[in-house]
Every structure is written in structure tokens, then in C-alpha cells.
Length: 333
Ligand code: PMP
Image (cartoon, rainbow, N blue to C red; front, top):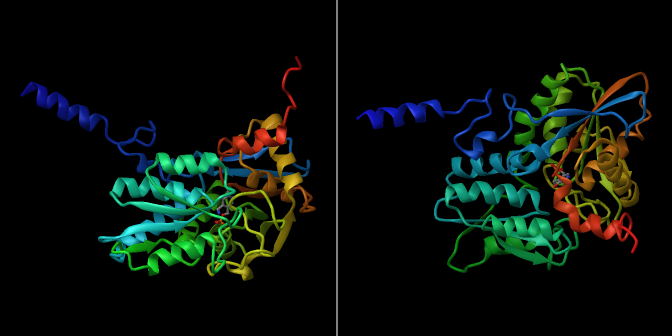
């Protein structure tokens, strides 16, 4: 009896406590206005008259800004009863797939991810470690809707197929729950964390979920906030971003919210990523380098405040970075 009491009080004692950062389930770490991701100032790799803050989305439990999207996509599917007796399929450049895989595993739902084969091996391995089935497609880096061999088309064909397994596609490109995720979490978090004092919001353009959801929320609070999208060059090497020269814009992307699109080529994006590592200790992926490079093009003056999304961690791109560094930095024999 005493033992049971002790155990009961132990369990009670170990209940969730956000202040102590003690949780009973990894999903309790998912972000939201009462559990925001950190906003951290960039001190060296920006023009001196701009206060740039990065929102560190790689500190989310499954490692990227897409934790928000995945949680909302799944919640919507569950609410509508669409997941009953079905398997999940999604086209992803990795991050959405990773978050979906972790959350689907909790629900006992099998996930198949269709993924462009040029995506770093680190992301594909992460997906397999999380129990997802990974189907590679030859559409280079960002999933495109190419009728024959794009990752999106392959995911859609699985849904349409008559294999005896019912597949449901989360469809971050067309599903408004992706936008809702950022309207309900990313936007309100930034508004609170800056006390409503910001002039610019910058986000890379992939599905457009982040910029549409957070951008809409921020503009509703203050229409003078400038919402800036970052687009890579055609044939780029920045996973997660999308060049609209080679892929059509997703249905959820609302251009009317975007004041300016800044084009960033691979070289400056990677150079700035390297500077963020070396001068500030930010271990970030290349889309963050693209965002910070774009911030330096704003021509902002007068101590304005900008918030940029740091979508994921540099640890997912070690093979890319090793390739880029070559022998640089290795001791000579
Ligand atoms: N950066 C990275 C690394 C990403 O994975 C994504 C998501 N595709 C983005 C930026 C862009 O986010 P969104 O899809 O919300 O436009």
C-alpha cells in the first residue's frame, strides 16, 4: 500500500511542468503562443542599423518549422475522420515528412514519404529511423507537381491507386491547415515576443504556409509590417525552398500578403550560413542563410526590427557542407 502511494505521488510529482521544462510526452514540446520557439538576435552577420532576430524553429521537438504544420495537418485529418483505416502519404523535401513521421508513429499510423532524390541523405535516414517508408523521385530538390515523376504527383497517384490500401495525403501544398498552423502559432508568438514592435517579417518560400499564415496574422495586427518572401534561383541547392521558375506556386500561398520577394542565389546563401556558424554559433540550414542574406538587402535604416524564420538545423546538411568545404580547413600532411 505504501509503495502504491509512493508511486502515485511520484507520478503526480512528475506531471508536466513547463517552468521546469519537464514533460510526460515529446508532443508536449510542440510550439504555440504559450511555448514559443526562441527569438534570438543576430549580432554580427547583419547591417549595423537593422535589429534582426531569428526564430529558431530547429529547437522544435522534431527539428523544424514543419512541426507546426505536421501537427495541424494531422489534427485536421483526425477531426474529419479521414485517417480511419488509412495510411498516410506526403510529398516533402524532408522536414514535413520528419515531423509527420514522428507524430504518426505516436498514433500507430504508417507514413510513406515521396521525396526528391537530391535531398540530403541525413533527412532520408531520419525518415527511415522514424519508421517512414521513403520513395525517392527524380525531381531534384523541391517536390514538384510534374505529371510523370514529381514527388507530389507520385503521392497523389498512391491516393488514387486501387492497391487495397487506402492512402490519405496530408497535402501541405493545398491543405489550409498548413496556413492555420502559422496563423495560430508562429504569427502570435512573434507578435508577443516583439511586443508588436517589428517592421519586417522574412520567410523562405516553400509551400508558402509560413509566410501566408504568420504574414496574415502580423498584418492584421499592424498593416505596415512588410512581409518579405525569399525565393531561390532555378536549379538551386536549398532544400525546402521553391523556385517559381521551375515549380508552380502551391494553392495555399497568398501573394497578396507579400510585399516583396527577394531572390537569393546559392552562393550568398551558403556563404552567410557559414558566417552564421563561424561568427555567431548558429548551427542552421541553408534556408536560414538565405533569409539572413535577404535581410541585408532590405535597405532598412533607423534601427528597424526584422524577424526571420530559421527553419531548420545545419546538422541535417552535413553532407552538403562537407562537399562545399572540400579540403578547406583540413590539416595538411
Ligand atoms: N526552409 C526549410 C528548410 C523548409 O523545410 C521549408 C519548408 N518547405 C521552408 C523553409 C519554407 O516553409 P514553407 O513551406 O512554410 O513555405
